Length: 510
Image 1 (cartoon, one colour):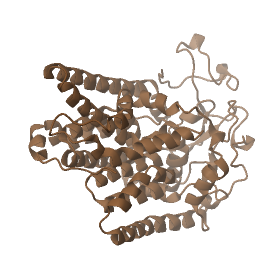
Image 2 (cartoon, rainbow, N blue to C red):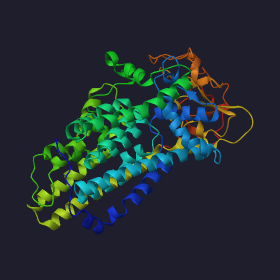
Image 3 (cartoon, rainbow, N blue to C red):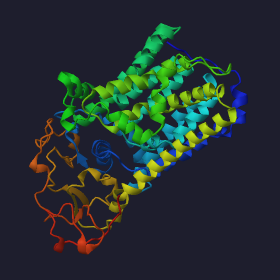
């Protein structure tokens, strides 16, 4: 397996590059923009993470079946970790500010991890690759989406980024801690992606006993608070990690109940989020045998171990029948790094064939085009799908109980953090969706210990989780095909009598 090589003139190169010299600041600005402008792309982020966080902070929120004590597929420790950010903020700020405050912390952590990897690439591989990785990362719509997301796959992505830096720096302790925390506190399935790093530790560690001791300490430090937290919230001993794996893996798993996509899904989705970066990254294995023409350019084999998880993970998740965009988050930084390495290698190769000035201009045009595509994708997402993030904030403050209903728009609800106060409650209304909807947490001291009978693990619809009509609703959030009231067609027209309802606020969504 390949190892890192130290680039001896790294300091001189970094002094010449203002991009690298100011890399951390650039990353922080980019990620803070994500924290503020990023939308919520996945309803799982809302109902499996933001809503439980809202519940433990404010006493009410929506519960999914995974948090039922009867199934216990999700660990409360991941929620509590974010509560440690949210609770202090809630003493000073309102709910919306707490929401964005949590996001800011997540975005900063991502930026710090990316900068750690960038610095390691500059030091241990090549500063030109580090500079290009930084540019790709800053303008990537995929990183914009994933860096501030409240999702286990985003935490696993941060851990993978730090692990990659650890491999480059030959810092096995960092690799071990990153893998353990990313898999136990983040996403246990991501352990598949960390397999190449585990092999690297076994093969290259000069102090194997110390490495095993580090693994034991890290595992205990990660698992003890997780198990204790689940015991506290579920009210009995639960093995949430085991339950999650059993449900999703045993006997082929049941995740296919939530949709099946073809094997090409991640290639199509990757092109959408990473644009030209993805095909460049996929060229990396083909470049392994190329001998650099420049003496200052190390072989791409030096990055083999660092980037191997990207290809292992892509193959693994492409094989699984149930696919989601957020599954690919885990290796976004590695794909960006692979693309940067390939671009620099191609430039080195073509410099020997074409005039240097022509190659420089072609590379600059390609990089600029990639950046423009990334910005365009990001702007399209925020402009055309961001109405809900502002619409719910238009609800008037009040002191009377109010039901805010959703039908077909149930999966776009941005979380109870955007409801003005405790007098507002979310209510589902029949919409034709035939899967299992969440229901409110029991608003009691032991609400997390409950096992509501209205939940099942087969994604079967439960009528008790929604209303048959909008008669009891005070507000209804829906979509229309026209902005003119005279020709407005409500998507939820079957349950809405338009003569009885008046538009109080609207947001434009493409």
